[in-house]
Length: 526
Image 1 (cartoon, rainbow, N blue to C red):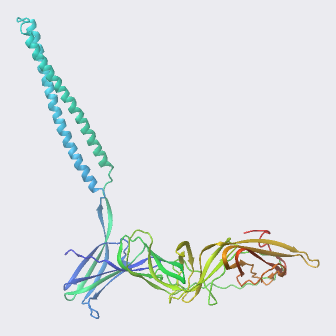
Image 2 (image 1 turned 90 degrees about the horizontal axis):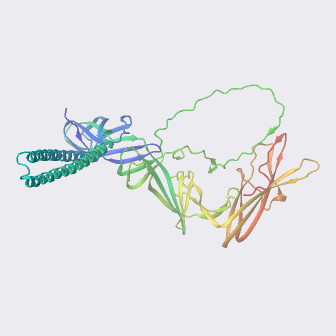
Image 3 (image 1 turned 90 degrees about the vertical axis):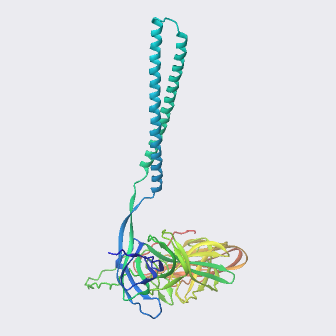
């Protein structure tokens, strides 16, 4: 069977979703008439045949390609991987050289030992001949000359012994070097195998032609989230909508056209189950004592009078899929790190104001109110805040529809501080039970050069029962006590330097056997 032709099929387009991405590989190639197999090496291991499609197009617009895709599949293989191959080869070469050096030293050592043994044997034989000459017939004649020869043999034997000792030290050093290299080789990990994936594509062409081949695959381990940057400048607010993309698919995306989608291909459309309604008869109970409890609850956000629901985890798009495009071609390496890209932006006029939430913080915050001028919504996400060229931190926004107004905090204004003190005063009444008034006193300090308007936002209890009402205490109110349906009250204070304070109060009016705990402890200060 003919081996498939190797083809480079680079990734050209990427569509990122909230929990996966679709990558499209595109390449032009020449085909001959008949069938042909192509191999695209080293694609992402996460590529699945169940989420992959391939098609061919003619290179000329409006023409029909005389070719078709018969099969596209993923082929996995194991490839040896030895990151320490160069180090292992170098150590092995050094080990062979050390072995050769040790063999040469050992050979010289053996020759030195033989020469030393020969010298000692000659010295012993010469000594025996001298003894025989001394005790033999010749007597002492010729002894002086024999002793000179004995000194020469002794010097030669000593030199041979010294040579042997030096070669023994050299052989020991060579053995230690060889052991060190063998130990270093033993510490290197053995080669392993890595898994690689190839695309195998089989095409059929009716005639020789040039086509454009595209392969689309959906991969996990990739996602995106919206992010924003707001810069407060002279004359308005500059806004950039950005996208932060992460991917760890095992394949780098280089020079790709990036699209960001809020669609959820993983979502399954299911009808909610219908549960049976059960009607039961029960006896009328006598009124019992009802114990109430205070519950802290955030204000609901409204758009044109309609209450919005909480955003689902992920990218909330208001129920309509949105598509955004990154500017130009981008590079996203497979490192699992965040990479930010600009999508679009605008410059809008905004109304500045100072707002304080003394129940939460003593700081006074600089806020702006503006409208979304884009035909698309601003998606919920973090906002990098820059005011007068200085980094102020990171805030966030919720979903903002086209043309919808929204507020944005841009850090605190250190020229102002707000303090809050809560109190509890009892009004004694003779004909009915005593009435308790709960007061909130706010004190705003300023050190500005010119007068500024500071908006103070306070909360008041909101009753969900007809038997319990929250009423203003006129004798304890310096400002009108008019909370909205979420219990929020807004007051304006104008000051430059110095301090200004005001107080508001309320009381509860209840009917029936209701037990209501204290909304807060008297004398609480924030």
